[in-house]
Length: 562
Image (tube, rainbow, N blue to C red):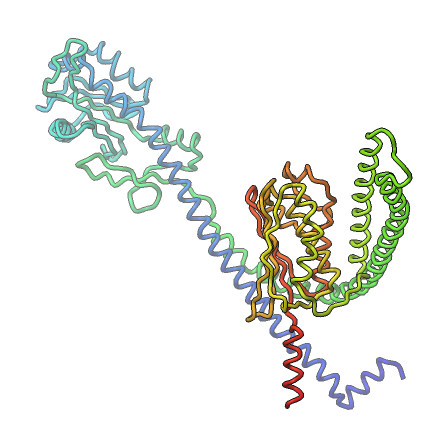
């Protein structure tokens, strides 16, 4: 019986495992569907919100453009009206009816060609019309008595406010015979610069107005991209237009807006729902396929990673073995060089003759010892990286090790005039450590303090016990060139040295502190540094406290007594 027949037979017999698998799939499908539905709702809400903000931003941008269009159209009229009203010759001529040729050359047709006005007038506060120009675009042959009364009333208001404000000119929109008109009225004032009576009280006003007709609105549509620009009533939308002070025009500039983003989303909602359902089905299929692919890829990656790790470990072992072999190969001739240099320096077989030979042999001996120290550091570093360093951890009297270290370093310190200040610690203080490794760490720390201290500056060594934490601290402080924060962060990395000019004058490979960090970690201690440039450095070595002999003897007695 094949697998398919067996599955059908099990199903017919009520195999509970098959139904359990179906229930598990159903249990997973429902929350996944709910999550996807929630995601779709959230996405739809975000789109709705974004569409609302987009529509609001678009309307605000169009309103800014509309304001700019109105200002661009009316500002030249207001400026020209104010400029000409402050002209002595016009003040003098306005006392009587203006010469038509002079007035047309400076006010009416001239201003129409210059700024696009459709009408101009000079009107006294008594209602006398000293000059009137009406362009054919206005569709007005002459002013009616009611219109003349309106302009006279507005002129009186402007003349009455002339002394109370720095901006006596007034402007705004009015309705004239049902048509939208932009009106600007300014008192005619003498400046006294061209023969006029300076300070004379105004008695007439200069009036400019402009019809917002189809031609002008067509220009707004063309130049400002306001599709279908027209004048409507306030409250129907668009941009409200400021009425002339004292009147109520109730006008607004309107235009056709684009299709609203919310309408687009509302129309596209059925399509979005269909796409959401198809996406859910597609996601389920893709997720299943990708799960299978990822499992296979993960297996392949695991195998490749295992292979690469093995290769890296083999390469690291080969490198460590090569460094160790090379270090041993270098040590043999170096020992011979150092040994023969010591014989020549000490002149065991008689004098060398010229004193320069003695100086040269001393240089050879010093260089050989220095090179041997570098090779030893490289060899030790390779052992530490390869985890081949062995430790013999036990109770070590810290005071004794510190004194031995100071004895080894005091010669170099004396050559530089540096005093090592050590007040000593309690003889019974002991720590858990490898004695040889601890001694090497202290030698490196003390040698660095002496090397990088300023001449004649003391180096301080102290031991402090912290009973509450079972810790003993050894602090080595110098007053030297110090280190920057950037170098402190890199401290302990192999071959890391500072770029300080004083430090560059001292030889070194940058392995010393890396070895210290590795050795200290090996026998369970901790090493920290505090430093400031041109102030000094303090190295703090924290070690686990070990019971002294007296303490161990007391514990044995207490144990025996119990």
